[in-house]
Image (cartoon, rainbow, N blue to C red):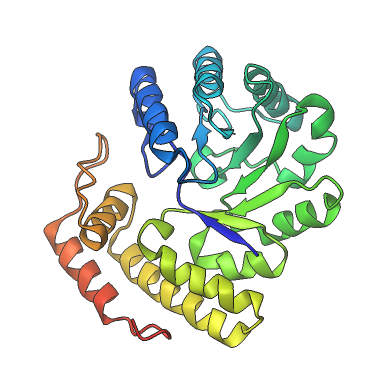
Length: 270
């Protein structure tokens, strides 16, 4: 059965790259502490533009007992080929030699478009702790080749483009990590249950309805700040303001997004 995650600690929705090192450590410590005996996994994103900072965060994640670490590609001075990217990832992973390591592939934000299929060839020899990929790209051909070529390695492929999750499941993704699941996690789990039966017609209904909401808010302008606004009105838990250069979602956005979400008639009747 596929699993759905929420977000990597200090990842995109958590604005990890807008936080300083001490803030990132504090958040990681709190998640590990609060997640004890409640969460199966607490994966901490330790990527940074500075290699020494990323290494420091990796050591810290290991020290506090994180169950995994994840790293995005550096995106100002970018690696231009597989060898350069692997060298960076290996230097980070080696600072936490007993902690499972995940590559966080998100080319729409990093601009690093090195195909994961190419990256994975022989990666275990260079990064023995390599466990899998959070794949946040729409290139399902690349994802399919990764899954097809690495069955023996038992890597985990966690998909991060929420509106295309059902497509990724169909070609063998193991799970999902995405911001949408912070407020539509229950509906997504029902989609996963339908997919597992298999009841593809029902699974498609859930995917189409999730997509209808995302399509609506994307047209309004939908980013991390707006995601936090939706999380706030769904959960009742204040998510706080984003950090500049991001700015708060407008009241107009909140009213329209809430009305759209409330108008959706889900197959389970809720």
